[in-house]
Amino acid sequence: MIKNINHVWLFFTDRCNLGCGYCFYKYRTQEQVITLKTFENILKFISPAAPAEFVFSGGEPLMDAERLKEMITAIRQQGLSRYISVQTNATLLDEPLMKFFLRHGVNLEVGIDGDEATTQRNRPGIGEYYYADIVRGVNLAIASHGPFTATMTVHPSSAIKLLENLKYLAGMGLKSIEVHPAFLEKWDAETSEVFLDQYRRACAWELKEGLHGLIGRGYSEPSRGTWDLLSVPSGKVLANWLLLSFPEEVREHLYLMDFGQDSSGELLPQAKAYFQALEEHVALHPNCSYRSISNFNALQAVRTPPGRKYEQRVIHYFDLCERIEEIDHKIMGPPVWQR
Image 1 (cartoon, rainbow, N blue to C red):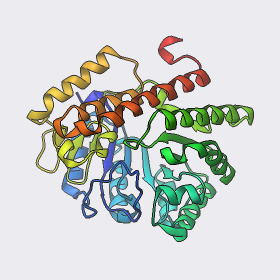
Image 2 (image 1 turned 30 degrees about the vertical axis):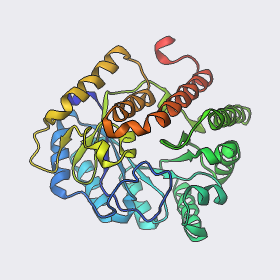
Image 3 (image 1 turned 90 degrees about the vertical axis):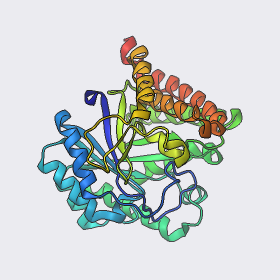
Image 4 (image 1 turned 45 degrees about the horizontal axis):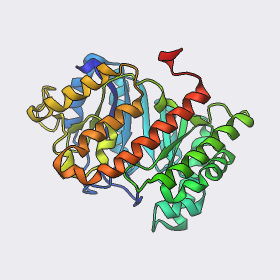
């Protein structure tokens, strides 16, 4: 089973200094940080599959920078990783941290949604001060010339500004931007059409300007595994990051393992049927995209009794994602399995 892992996601802290309204990890305590014992259990489990791809997230990882550096150093020293990425809002990024990331070959993935007005709408209450810190952090990362990407999350209320905000970020010097519709927000037929029209325009502008690769399209390519080993600070493991969007009453039905104890890497009894459904889906769709696998996981969440109230939002989101992939494949050429 370990051979089917796509990424190792470590949501090692649930503390954050911002309050993004669309955050997919909104149901958290704001207090938990992973223990070193839990981290060691995860590394022991991953070791046979090394080197793996690690993604550190939160919360805001830089709020617990010393623990973050300890974990990155351990992974590099043990030769367990071929790729490490840190997802951050960049407000706490400084020169010493930047030097550490460069020294350890860490990719920074900064969340920035466009101009100040868009950001303040998506992240109510953060104010001008924090936006200035985000921009300062982004500029620091750009100036370092290290591996660096950005994620532009598009809320339905901001869909009409998708192209405008993409141009704004490109004007800042960003060279690689993932463009994602916000999950579990109120996408309907009208806002979806606005998003898709803007996304088509953005793709056309990217090609016209010769900015090939500006819009990241990796989510539309075939997935490299069945599941993500995604650990929350307690050590409990989920199969995909979209599952973090649901409250604990939904997630408790979806945990696969628990590394907070002396785990041997065995599936939890209640997770076996869920994992079997996931593997069967991938077997039936062997070249499905990472986005498709993520959406399948979300579908399992809304099939739980407490998750059914989210079903309508998920259906609209699924449809939007399928149409995004259609646009991506027109830009990239036929999917790999059709060439």
